[in-house]
Image (cartoon, rainbow, N blue to C red; front, side, top):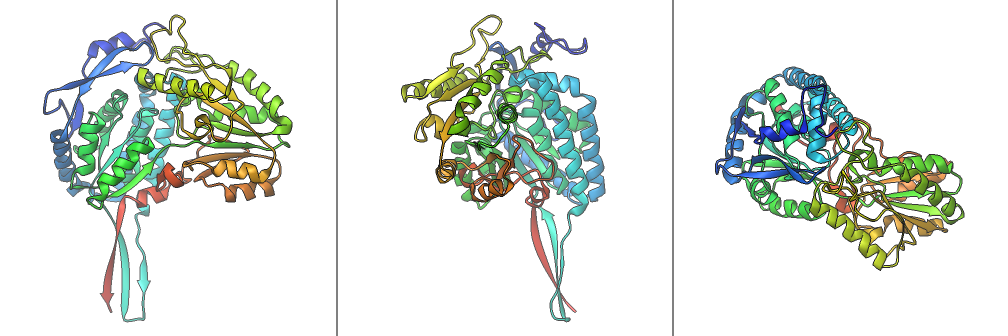
Length: 496
C-alpha cells in the first residue's frame, strides 16, 4: 500500500506528480490573480502533497462577480430544474466514489473506508435538498376580506460557505446543497489544510452546474476568509470551525449586517447510569469519539464520559480493552482503523492538552505518546488516549481537544451530574444512557445542548436539525430549516 493504488488507476505518487490544483471561478480552472501558490501536506508522511492557489481579495472579487452573473439566471430557474441538476451531481459523486475517497483520505489523513461513507452521506444530503427545492413556498394571509397578504421566499444572491478540515469532501459537497436548492450561488472556501478534495469535487460539479453557480477559492483564512466576510455583496455566510474564528466571523459580519450561521466546537458529555449494558455503552462511546472516521477531530465527539461510581471501574476496564483494538494505519489502506491528525501543529496542540492534564493530576491509562514506529514516524499519528482521575475544573474536562482523547469522570448524585454536563461554554451534543426512559427524557430536557441522543451516540439523520447551544453555534443545518435560512421573506400586500 506504499503508493495507494486504487483500482489500478491512481497512486499517491501520481497525485504528487500532478503538483498543481487550480481554483474554480466562473466555470474555469484558474490560478490566483497574484500567481502565488501554497503548499498542502499529506498527513500520513508529513511530505508535500500538492500546491493550490493562494488567493486574496482579488480572487474573491472575481468569484463574487461570476456568482452574481450566474445568480441572475439561477434564481429564475424552475425549482425542478435546480433539483434535477443536484440529483445529477449526487449521482456523479457515487460514480466516482473510489477515486474521491482516495483523494479525500490523502488530503485529510482520514481512513479511506470512512471517506467512502462520507461521500455517500454527501450524496444523500444533496438528494434531500434536491427534493426540498419544490418546498420554497410562501403563505397567503387573509385579513378582513378587503386585504390579502402573501409571502414569498427569495434567495440572497451570492452566499459563502467556509468549511473545516475534518470532512473536506463531505462538507464541500453536502453544505452547498441547501443554498443552491434555494436559488443562491455559492462561494466555497475550503480549509487551508485540505483544499484538494474540494477542488476535485469542483471539477465534478462543473460538469453539471452552470458556470459561476459554484466558485471555489483557496487561500488562507486571513486572505480569503476575511475578504469573503467583509465583501459587501456577500450577504449570507455559513462558517464551520473553531469558536475563536467563529467569533471573528460574527464580529466582522456585524459591521455590514450580514446573516451568519455558525457550527462551532463541542465538549460533548456522555451520561452513563448504573442500569445499562456496559458493553453496549462502551461500543457506543468508542463510536461516538469518531476514532475510525477522523481520529477524534470532530466537534460532535463524546469526549467526556460521566459514569456512575458503582460501575466506574468495570466501565473503564471495558473501555480500555475496546480502545486498545484501534490502531493507527496508513490512511488510504482499506484496512486502516484510524488515520493521522491533520498537521504537525495540531498534533503538538493535542499532545499539549495531554501533558497539561498529567501536570494537573489526571491519570493517563492508555496512549498519550506520539506514534513514532515505522512507517508512521514522519506522519502525524497519535493514538487513542484515555484519562481517569479527571476533575470537573481541569482543562481536559472543559476545553475541546479536537483529537483522540477521552476523559472518564465519576458521579454519584444526579443533580451533580446535570451540573457537570452544563458546566461548559459548549452545547453541541450529548448522549444519555439509561433504561429509564422517563429519567432520560428529563435529563434531555435539562441538558443545554442542541442535539441529544438517548441510548445512542454519533448517529445523524438527514432531515433532523443539527446545531449548537451557547458558544457551539448559531442556527441549524441538515434540515428544511437550513434551506429556508438561505432565503429572505418578502410580504406582498394586495388590496381586494
